[in-house]
Length: 230
Image 1 (cartoon, rainbow, N blue to C red):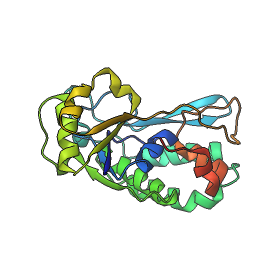
Image 2 (image 1 turned 135 degrees about the vertical axis):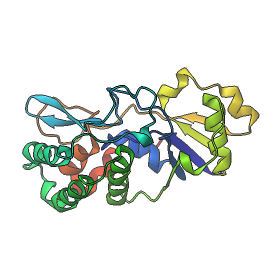
Image 3 (image 1 turned 60 degrees about the vertical axis):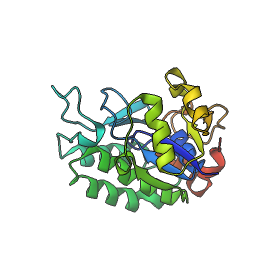
């Protein structure tokens, strides 16, 4: 049995995103999809003394309503420097910040020269997977032939990747047609993001939905103990 998950790339995603990756054999970045504003593609939250704080990568989106995520370009080259300064400000006193500081400082420096949003996102996703020792294969939807139809396209990607089991995020229940997977002989299951344990976190009250950087900087090598597989 080969397990597949398919999801758009996100900017420094939360822990649930990486739980989904580590629960499957191949994770397909679905950046052939349309770019959506005010979504997780180009932004995420960190903790601050005043509560969750947005970090947003500025992108060229005005008038480009149909552009795909893979074709979305960053509009301000100074974003990386600004984001790293903010992260340093809010997390410099976290127990494991200094442990990871050189890696992320270097990553932000390198990403400042990357014009495509998708490529920035995958840089951070791969780096964090390495730190969490997640060995899942990461590929792109562009690597495979795409079919028409929302559910049919997901089934086609699973078939092209040799998958027999598809693990979906729970939000996709609103549009996935279960029978299409059943007819194709592919088992369909949904990720459950409930029941995560809290961890020592700066600036209470506790918030689960922030970037996984929060978990890494606060718990270090114990991070996986505060995550769970499906």
